[in-house]
Image (cartoon, protein in one colour):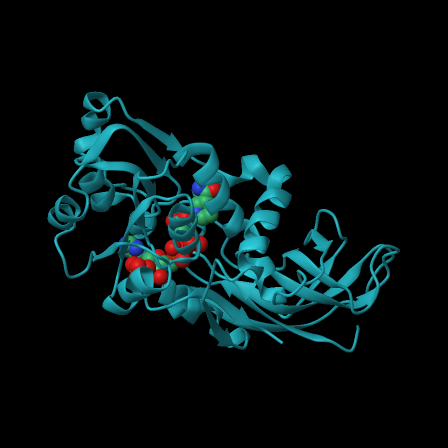
Length: 339
Ligand SMILES: NC(=O)c1ccc[n+]([C@@H]2O[C@H](COP(=O)([O-])OP(=O)(O)OC[C@H]3O[C@@H](n4cnc5c(N)ncnc54)[C@H](OP(=O)(O)O)[C@@H]3O)[C@@H](O)[C@H]2O)c1
């Protein structure tokens, strides 16, 4: 056995409604010796995201839930702690699927597939996990390929202070859209209007969304970037403008309810308004991530785009961070610093 001891979170039970700490168990195990072609990854940061709730119950896009007793999945940044792999050296920074654990043995390709990465010039290495990674790409390609923003368009964004939503607000503003955000607290709404450039922000927990949409979008909604589904999507569909584009990116409001999704009643307005609604999957754009990285990297370096992180410390915090995001208690891009 190697000198290393791994701590990992395994799935202990399935949530009945909300995710609870008891759905996970922290286990300790010695790390096996490496075989030729393997490398040992030491996690630095692991991210959490809302669809992890679905991975525990319905399985979401994977179609089957993560098995009980299996290490919880989670992508992040790691350094190579030991290597028997010709293409990786000790100290290399890598990114990929690590799981909720301190150490992972990878073969570089299939088991814990990772890529060697470098911190983007002038930016923190953690940006690789969000604005310079998959979330940045999700916002960017959702906007250019589906939202097709035009100056003067009214763009409504749900989870406007969230990882993807905050980027969509800023990309929309830069395209000359009137941006109206929807978020879950007054602090988040202030952030959306004062730092992300939205003209208005609706607090869906304390305000009537349909009524506030009528006030803030008097000429109708040209673009809706949907991160939540459910009643908010329904309220927006009731107020879309002629030729609107509705992009279904996420359904966070339904992830605790993912075996019985809420169906929108106002969907026929898509017909009246000759609008388009798209189901969007970022996996189809993975070969184009260099485009989003180039654009978003330039905007960040020029100070024309911003982001905010919400980092908890230590592997013990992973289930807590997942629970916090599913309750909207995080304020910023959620992640956990492991080492
Ligand atoms: N289609 C794709 O390829 C693709 C790719 C990436 C992400 N996604 C999806 O896009 C969405 C956004 O992803 P993200 O990583 O940026 O996550 P995120 O929006 O940062 O998720 C966390 C936020 O979700 C909100 N939330 C939590 N519970 C909620 C509820 N019951 N109803 C409404 N909002 C709730 C909270 O904000 P508030 O306090 O404002 O409620 C919370 O801070 C997610 O649904 C994700 O699954 C899709």
